[in-house]
Image (cartoon, rainbow, N blue to C red; front, side, top):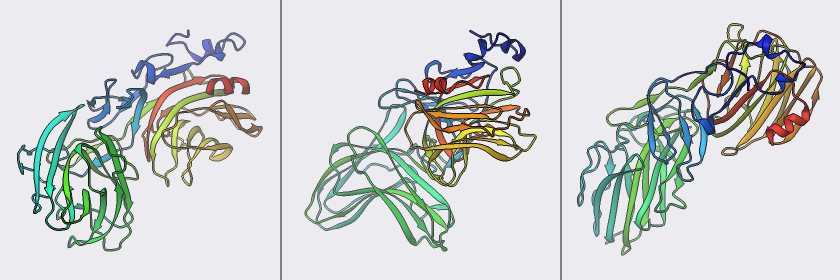
Length: 436
């Protein structure tokens, strides 16, 4: 095994034998610490606290500048290092503070829950589960008239949050039905409203498949009305006919409304909106392990959300002070869902290949470069053909993990399971075996 402090001249001695193993490597999904394995320390920063699921599936809070090693809350499988762009939860009391149990009970401070419907009784109860605060809202009885809607607003509709046409917003909530069953139409909704709070348009996502186990539902809307001044998020049950027997308990957990194209990790709030900064993961300098003449890097990753119009670099080498004209990376295109492998020399793209990709799939991706000799591989298969026009400028000074050469995530939510760099252009057969 290579020593952590081994320098590049020592690393390159030995007729290529030592260069067949990585000079930098991390296995975040297994080891679950930032600095282990081979190579110099990674620097990590993030303003504000952030949440993730620990190995027991319990929501856990990381302090500022603390990396998150996330898990699937259902299967408990390790997902690796969680990297997200900065977001704000606009809902000011997502924790549901101020609620008290009873019939009808006291709703959380600032929430707007339907209080009473003729023929139905409302009951509220509270508790905690897997690190979350929850609010249970039960309705039972027989309707004595038709009901247009039962609403569960984590903020009063009259409040809303400042927004404007062209913005994209996502509302999300963890929900379950702990007893009974919901009436036929139940959904979450993002609505755009004018300055007088008149509803203009909305997008609904029905709670299809809701069960007794918590699961997250989300809805995204790009605001498109020129009069839009506010945005709201709510849960609703609509169109209940007269003389209908109703008996259900809806569990509401962690409502979130954020400006962005997908839902990110939960941001708890109690009395005001809260911002979580972007995860910034960077290695600089890289001279102790990086070979400026040739090399191969490997990343095992999955993404759960992305902004389609943003060009995203998942793993990148480059030079910030040079304005990043020379770089190589694995990323995502800004016009489609392709996983992209590219190299630029003096700002000119001289190596590029891609493959279609989707969220929530683990990808093992590699890119190998030497002068006039480049190739990429994905999940055990080579992409394209050998590129004979690659330039290899020597001014790279940094490596961004989960972001560009600034190391800051933008437009994406993803997990990095493994990363490795080899100071040699590995053979095509080796690329296939490493990514299989």
